[in-house]
Structure formats: C-alpha cells, structure tokens
Length: 309
Picture 1 (cartoon, rainbow, N blue to C red):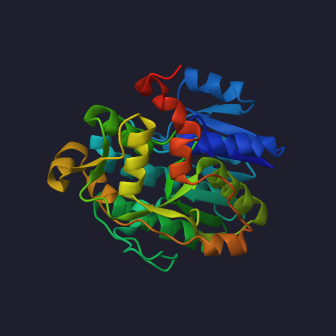
Picture 2 (cartoon, rainbow, N blue to C red):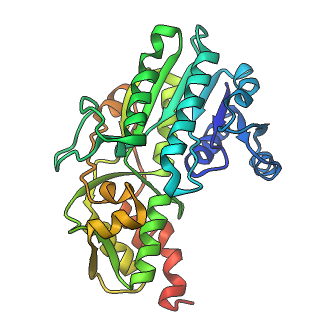
C-alpha cells in the first residue's frame, strides 16, 4: 500500500510513517522544506514538497496514494492556534475533494481536547465535541470526515488521549518545562481532573489497524489506565529529581499565559477505547504514562537535573 502522510516529520505522523514502512508499506511524506525532505528520505520514505498552508500543493501527493493519513498540524505558535485550525480545515476539505468517489481511506487525526470536560467517567464516541473557536472547528471536521462515506471516501477519525512516549509530545514537554522552571510538578488548578493517555507506539498501531481493516467512523484511542493530572505532575517532579510535591497554577493565570490550553489541562479528558478494541482489533501494549515518565523514555530527561552519571 502506498500511503501519503502529512506530518511525517512530526511526532505522530513520524511514528505512523515508520510503523507503516516496518510493515512493508510505501510512504510518501509531506515536506514543507528541503530540510524536512531530507529527514523523510533518511527514514526511508519518499518526500513530497508541499505545505498545509497551501492545500493545492498536496494534490500530487494524494493522486498517487492508495490512502491518506492526515497527522500534520501547525504547532509553530500556540498563540495563533485558531489560525492553525482554519488552515487545517482548508487542507481537509481539499484532500476530501481530491479523494471523492475513489473509495480510498482518509484518516484524520483529532484529539480528546475536542470534548470539553468529559467528567470523571470514561466517555465513548457518543459524547459530542464541545468548545469554541478552533476546538469547535475540529469537532466539525470530525463529522465531515465521518460523513465522507456518502462522497465515496472511507473517512476515519482517530481521537487519541494525551499522547506520550519516546520522550516526545508537545503537552508532555510543556508539563516538563513548567516543572523545571518551578522546581516541582505543576497542575493547572487543583489537578484532580482525570486524563486518558496513549503511548505513541500504540497510537501508530491504531492507524495501521484502521487502514488495513478499512474501517470508517470515529474511534477513541487510549489505554485503559487513566490518571489525574496531579499523578502525572507528581511523576514528572520525581523524574526531575524533585519531591512528589505538586504546585497549583491558578486557572486565570494559566489562561493568560497559554490560552485555551489552560482549560484543557484543568478539565477531565477521560475516554473509552472499547470501540477501537472491538472493531479495529487494537490492543495497546505500551507502558502507562507514569511508568514511562519515571522509569521509561522520559527518565533520561531527568538525568542532568538529578546529577546522574
């Protein structure tokens, strides 16, 4: 199978691309610079020069692909996220138009952030997106992709929880950086809110399962284990060599500094992935998020802070 992957030099898209190639598939990765093209070649994939900000530049990459995985998103400036969501929407519409009537798979990458506050119980796919601005737009894109089957496109949405592993993840690095600056793990608000999470390797497996099974629809992707943000922050503090003490960042102060992300970090984001397990035959095998922070990949980030050899 020849798969066009946006975000192939990024965290999620890169993991998807490597997993597909390991399974013997051919990957064409979107590259917006010669440097990105070189990194895609180094991983063994074929680069396609283009930019999500110029959706028409994607068309040649789509034309020769058997399936499309859209894992790219503009994270360059957290203060301009609404603009990034607008660009994402334009790219999705262009890609769906190009695939119309082909029967080919299109996988869209969403996230549990579209759900607002799920409450402490695990929410399934019946819970509708809730939010304003870019979050609302992403929720609308989920529906458009799922409804694309009426246009002859096998549209699938994967909605992961907090993605972690292999020392990556934008939210994970934000939490670690906050702890480094503060000298303790940090939560936005009291930290009693619960988050579901998924290891990057398990998430990449979900993409491959969805492609091979040609399943359409919306799928939550998360491990069974769920942790409070206090648990996660405390583990980060211990990993960095601090005590397990956690400091609270008042929500209003956090909003001024990181915008809408603050509300997400203070909300419950607990989701059930039973549908993915049953229909995609997806069974995660990676560590839990706190295990990976304290004794797994992230533990290496704390070695300098602890003065380890």
